[in-house]
Image 1 (cartoon, rainbow, N blue to C red):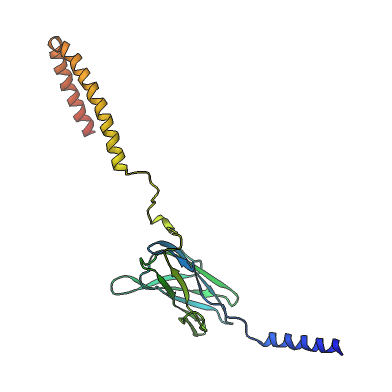
Image 2: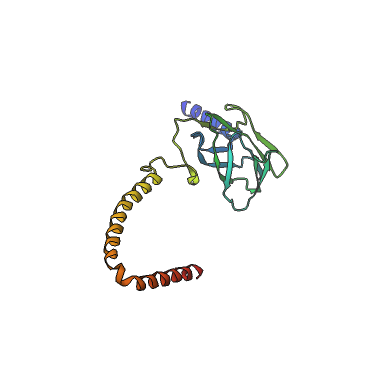
Length: 225
């Protein structure tokens, strides 16, 4: 009796599991955390969750985010929509995603200087014309992906757009100091050379004059060449 009861309960559970809808796979944007005023590589993961294939993905760019470089995804075309001021309003990818496939898009963008949450609202269009709008807050049926921007998170500096604060001193100052040091040595050498030359200037003045003229002409010829 007990064995038959357990078997019946197991079969009932399997039947419920088979009839239950699969968990929805949401559009994801990584990273979920970022530093303010930083160049970040964002990756957009788009799974296909219907029997029809995805043909278009439109991602709205949050205010303050400035995309500046985009990766090419095989089989997909990319276009941009812009605001009146020329800033990027949305990124649009068009292609064909199979029923059991997913697409991965990536781009580089600067984060806003202020802390806060970035909501990545997106519209996923299928080949039957149906659109799924990922625009709801976290916990909703179709939530938008969110990136939290805070100073507590490390900087990524993707693409080397930032500056490195570990440099050892001001190059201009260092160069000036070296030049001043070398200038003192050069002055002493020049003074000694002039003193030695003064001893012979009387007897070799004509030849020295001819050398100066020849050197000047060679210098001018070198510049022309």
